[in-house]
Length: 176
Length: 134
Image 1: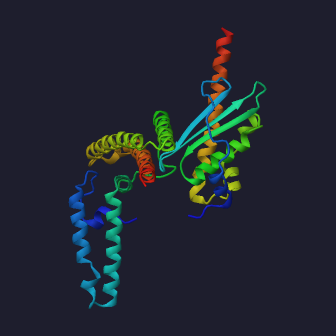
Image 2: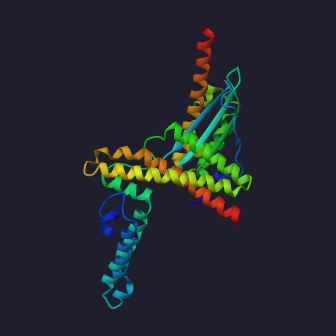
Image 3: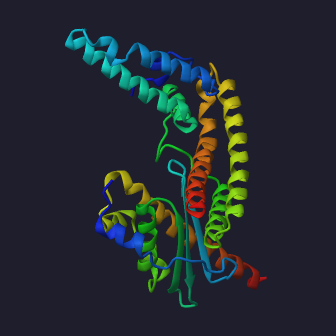
């Protein structure tokens, strides 16, 4: 897999500045725009096009904190994915099960305010987890041996994301 | 991704969705999750005094394959003894549902859930025995 940090020419860190990242993407996209290569030889046109696709893919990965964390871990040789990660803690599972059931109940009651409130609480948690992950990634630079310790929080982040995706689908459904 | 007909059938008509009283001494509860996809699965069994699973319920927040795997698991569990239930393997679930390789982990999750429900039931029974022995 291509290193998205390298592709966009940004420092490999978790707490990237989103504006800086967007600027970098815009500049590269502009430089690689097909219009600039209209008169260029076919090989060069193909190359610039595939570079432009790489740049877009890398931007999508780095914009998303979950995929950005996965990319950082892969870079450091920490395996991520289905079988590689530690099992979620029973407390987290219990909590996510309860919150998801509450969300389902709120949906059945068509209680939009309750859905908002549940989502707000999880968004707050998400911010805390992101901040903590940022600290952990920073602390493990350059000593990447500590990086595996980020995995439980990465797992938690995915649970929170799932919850928020579900909540926004319900918010949309109930407000239409 | 294309789901098999059997997955879609279970997804649209999940069997045995619900909750059993987790404090009931006849009930074993398994709560498992897949961190890579953010799935959470609860599977519960109610075991009679003769050791037969008389009821099974599940609740899964996850993809269609995870829902189908746990739905099928509860179907299979009912009427089985605990020992028979322990023989259920993820490969049997995956085969029955025609799960593609990228979704095999959903059947693994269901097997984990069965095992953990049985373990919970057994630890309750052991605690009960220990208590009555005193």
